[in-house]
Length: 115
Length: 115
Image (cartoon, rainbow over the protein chains, first blue to last red):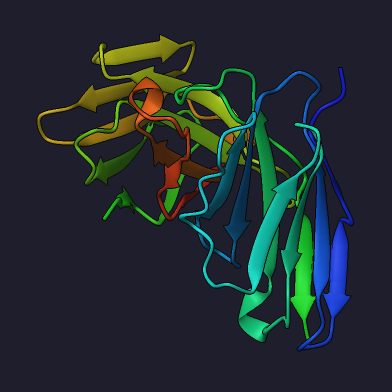
């Protein structure tokens, strides 16, 4: 079946502009995660969604970052007033089981470049 | 806070040799430890994982060991092949003890297998 998809694959934006990144998880997966991967670095957790529960936003680096998940499926990560340090690959992942300890399937990522 | 340290950052081996990557974690509540392989320009993919109720797990040429007392776990790849060349990430999470499956990742190890 289809894997996790993300759009756009690449996004170049000017400093100060807002951007929206989209994630389509695997159908039926209840949990959805956003991570950020800076050049040559590991993956940094941003936010987690599970059903109707309040999201775990503990990884969001600033209040310029927000995310929502509509209808328990598609998710959008929004970055307002982008800064150069926001440049990174933003990865979305989904997993089947609600509790932790389940394989997370990653999307191809969105490469964000802030000029 | 939660932290995962990974060593070495780069590893070069001759084809057919073994490779070992080590990680330590700080959160004593962690009980799920996956390893991801990321080829250049591609998404991370799970290659093996281990839960805290076991000390070792094998899958063909790949094995993972866990020492909960010392809070470290290792990836072992035997009979390495050029296609094993990639960046490897370890991660830790609280698994089913937590209502979030967020993964805390190590910084990654770039493995190069020379033919």
